[in-house]
Image 1 (cartoon, rainbow, N blue to C red):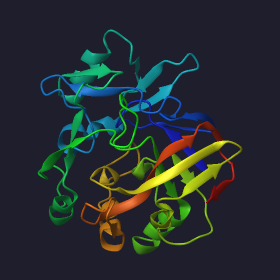
Image 2: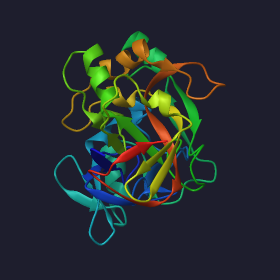
Image 3: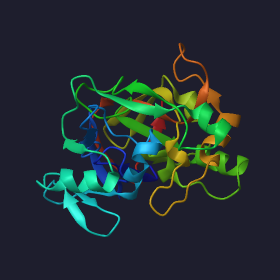
Image 4: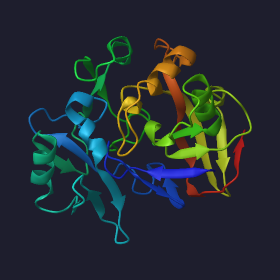
Length: 272
């Protein structure tokens, strides 16, 4: 295990950690809060970049006392349980929003159409379509699909080799786990249906390749925008996330938790 991340507020930048507990709901503190647009009731997500890409200018962390703290672009901070937090975020994002710890009864978000973005290269005008949440995650969670998202060093190296040749920043793909492997290519595709035993207790079941949208192309804090983050996957790793869907640009894989347990950087990962 090479690196670990959690993202306490959905679509905000997260924090890299050395270790974490993992339950069926993912890493401790991961996606425990989200923003909901007051007028539509939809969950705010940078997958709709025209409205929400500024979320990626904010960073969320979990304090030693368990509170979720947000670092705003001007360097000030706010906690998600602060009474004034909703108003501050609404003013910053230009949209009326509220922070929630429980998803709406019918939780949806808008997702930019990746092929339109590739064709036009313009996040401002790309069309969006509605998407549900937590299709393969426990009810009441804010995950897009499953509680664990992983990517391998092999995939990141392959993207770099097929693109500019520069190292690819994992943060673009918002993984929980970056796994170092000696294999080459988009190896997560071959892991679907298999189990990963990590450390002494944790076991994951890999369920699907991760289809990519506009998010990897956007600026993530100091990491600049880059359309190649989607374009390279579209050219070289189009696969069907599930059999009933058409092939899509994919990087990484989704997983469910078979057996909870701790995880830490340096843990051995065994593929069964």
